[in-house]
Length: 166
Image (cartoon, rainbow, N blue to C red):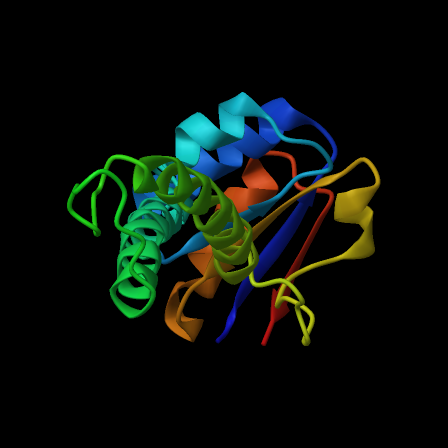
C-alpha cells in the first residue's frame, strides 16, 4: 500500500485539501484528526455504522434463546399448573426480554471492537504522533504515477509536510 501523507495545522486547509484530492480521484482517503470534527465527517460520507447489525443479530439471538431454553427445560421437568399447557410463551417473555438486552449489548461491544479493529497489533500506515496532538493528517492511497499530483494538491492547500509512505 503506497501513498502520500500530508500534515496540516488548520482544519480549513485540511478540508480544502480533501476536496482537491477527491476531485483528482487518486485513491482512498484516510483522515487523522486530534478530535472528532463534523466537517471531516460530512466530507468523507462514511455512512451509518455497521455496529447496529451486531446489535440486531445479538438481540434476535437473545430473544430466541430466551424462549427456547425455558421451553426446552419445561419439556424435561414439566410443572403442570391448573391444566395449562406446559411450554406456555407468556411467562417466558420476561426471560426472553432480559436475554435479548444482555446478548444484544454484548454483541454491540463485540461489534465495536471488531469494526474499530481493537486491539491494533500493527501501526496504521501514514499515522504520525502529531495527529494526536494538534495537527490533522491526510493519507491518500494512490499508485506511484499519481503521487506527484496528490503531493502538489496537498502542498497547494497548505500542508506543512508532505511525504510518501509505503
